[in-house]
Image 1 (cartoon, rainbow, N blue to C red):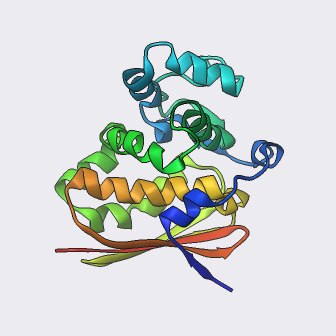
Image 2 (cartoon, one colour):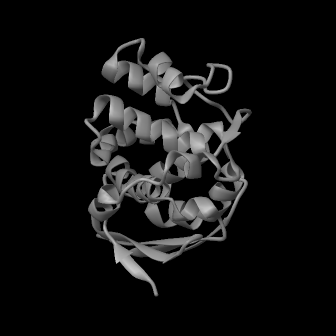
Length: 205
């Protein structure tokens, strides 16, 4: 049975055990992580990116400050990156990560930034499926959007059941609207199963 969940409920959901997260199959393209190191350094000092890598057990060659499309890494890196930042500097509050997320909204994929600035949310969200396919090797995203609402239906990947993944992806939509200066009326997730997840949203004219 499907169940609606808010961002606040997702943030309060216990994380998966570390071993389960590290065992997730799939890879993510580096540009999906945006300029994470630049923004972490701006917030918490120039040594902060190295501290993150130390906690993750990853060298700079695997996780550079500004990953590019040429960089591929295990999908768990995206999840653990957020968790480590939250634990180290946000007091364990996953909602505290949203400020950093909002700042990086302007440093993501150039095509998505252009669409966001020029075409608005409908065009961006309709492209979400092809964007997912370009940055993630597992699962599929079926995106539908009209002038004032959208549905993003993620299916067929273990990572789609991870609470941190669900929070980050739902949060990224909310911060995208902040970046575009558009008023989001509602947003929630739908727990559709262990390997499926949906985001539904509406916005003002």
